Length: 109
Image 1: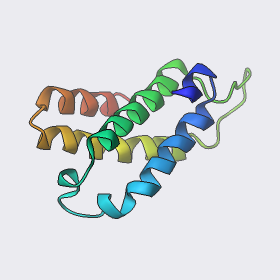
Image 2: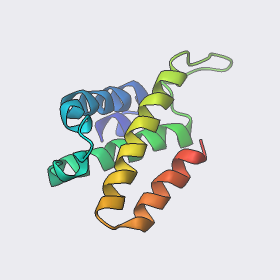
Image 3: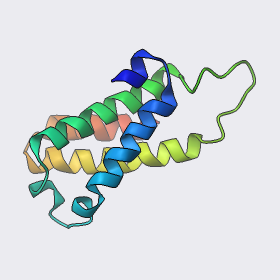
């Protein structure tokens, strides 16, 4: 993901929000996981890994010293929503180990 290689968390989160907005009509369906294209699942996974990398690395737009990321709560909300849906996708695909890994990652934040 370009945002990670450029060390720009805003780019990672904006890409994730774009994915969310584009798939929102599908995500609103109760059986959304049946309607996702495999490349959409791959994109969700990449967004999840990218956002998690930003949280793990503490890479929030190159903050200095005592600066605070006031958008952190919004970033966490995006990460949480995408993580929960992605774990449901893997649960539907009967890939429970991946679903559990995603949930554990989310709970660790």
